[in-house]
Image 1 (cartoon, rainbow, N blue to C red):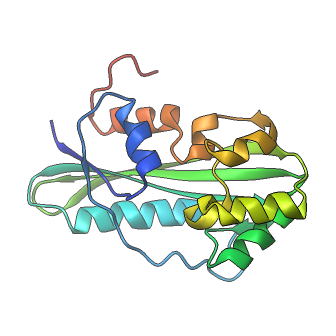
Image 2 (cartoon, rainbow, N blue to C red):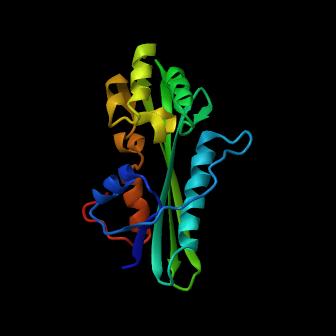
Length: 200
């Protein structure tokens, strides 16, 4: 079995991938996440997932390897919301998402190499979940920002933490909003030769 590498430092992705019951190593990939001018959200998450997977391969040892990479963003009214740069930016995003139906998109890419340093395959999927969000008051936004939770999350919130009380509905998988859609991940990993018991 090839070595499986998760090219992400996200503890949420680490935890979710562990639910598939596969052994893996964590080796974060550092890439430039700057959107290109006019780049749609779906194209952006697809490109960044691929870039991270390919960066993971480039840093791989000389042995058969499978690299799993992902990128998650939030989009509302066509605008891409990434991770906030500071508390004011986090508050701005939370105001923008207040009372909306917005999209959380995760690009998942799996790249393989045969041990000779040559990439042998690359597959990618983008999964979208529509999130319905109740309105936030300015006091609620200030308290949530002060908690520190928004600071490393796309769209400045984590559905599995304090912001969940403001989510009134989901159209699509919950784990996608957390950061790793497991059904798509399992499909891609099986296609790369990783055995996953019970995955459909």
